[in-house]
Image 1 (cartoon, rainbow, N blue to C red):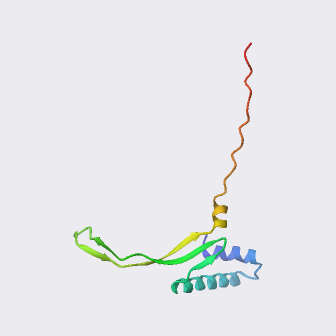
Image 2 (cartoon, rainbow, N blue to C red):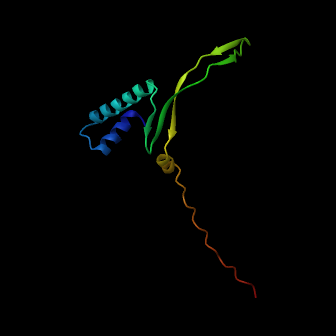
Image 3 (cartoon, one colour):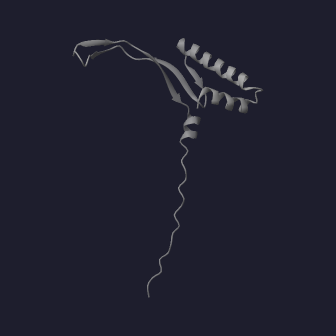
Length: 108
């Protein structure tokens, strides 16, 4: 789903007057999310999950072409841990239909 499609769905769910208003609110949310993560804040949305900025460790690797050692610089990434409510919703177990027992007739 693209951002425009998400904004349309958001407009319908929130009873907003226009797509432009929904798109603006989605963009504001995304911008606030980016700013908070840039400040290394942990964002917790109960039921949805947790956004957290993490950093990889500095490491040493080997250049596959030359075989020389190289330094791998740390990089930032976003970790999202799914909340229990969303996890339960995504992993709903479908009940298998119960097998009907059939009785076999005895031969006479």
